[in-house]
Image 1 (cartoon, rainbow, N blue to C red):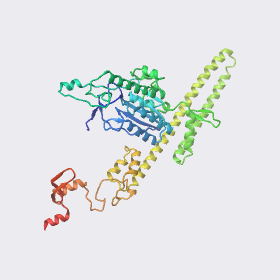
Image 2: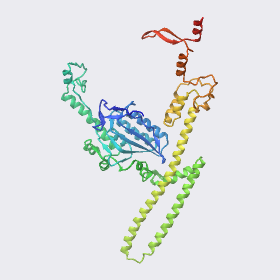
Image 3: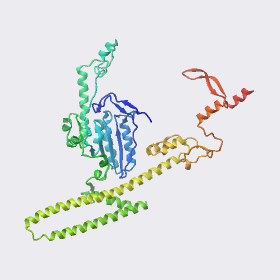
Length: 488
């Protein structure tokens, strides 16, 4: 079992992070590639502290944007940011949040977020890019603010007998240097910068549609809120579980605006969206998917007929009440209308949800098949790739974008003997039936060690010189000619 590796988070500079996270230990875990759910929703995970650029120990804004591009390449119906992070560096955070929203808007893909445990500071900035945020009741949300640190180590230096003289080109150049004593001007300048960055944070949240206005967000005083408090403060949409956040009835908008031929805005319901998607698939080239789509459309038409029969029965029942007093009639009709509206709404939502689930399951399966076929085609085009590299590129854990980049940009080497491009995906173990029979079944480094131990390879020593050093008695394997000459 691998031992768990932890790293302390102690970055420098302005931070947008939960106050307890600075200096804390965090598990070092690799970023998880995006996954596509069975209803066509791509899940992008955000875990742990956030750095600006790619980092060995922690997640980063660069990594998050790369995973977002990978998720969009899956052709999802929507993307869900699954966040559990205390935040991180201010540097890059606000621009990244805006880029995430812009990327999804350009691709016409809805961006949603879910927070089971924590999305504070810079992590909430990422969540704010979403149009809908689901949170658990116990989640930690908010901490919308910026923090920086000024350290005065002059007393410690004096105690250790260390004297430091800073030579600067300006009065403000030494601000924040621990070997310079703190002064009111340095503190005031840092405070001004922190307030300016915090204002940018407030504006980002409000621009993305959360928290009301800048003054309301500032009035929170960077407090950490529970899930229910965040919903009440307008920082989250609803209390929800992760499964509810992934479900179609939670993700599907109540209606979306589309332009009619007359230039008027018409609202398309989830039901209309489902029917349109099914009709498009029914006319597609994939006969199996088209057959399923036609069956789903037939099922919807059957449900519509049953609904119409129910309406006729209800109208007949209403006619029987004509002799009742007019005032009672009006009350009954109003109550009956409310009941009918509720019934119709529930029925439409049920039918639309079922239809959309069928549609997006088909689309998700088709997207996976296309990605698998493209991966195989790309790898087969590079007959010069070795078995180890092919094994990595063939793994579903390797993003398709990485396969594209490596197949397109890696310098081409010689085609391996006995290997064709069509056979590039065959990466079985080395056995007696592979190669021309003369190749060793051992790895090269193991074969060299074994040949040396058996006396099949003779060693000699020599003096090796490079631009930095001179090495005497360096070991080197003798060539065949040198060995033969030594025998004579």
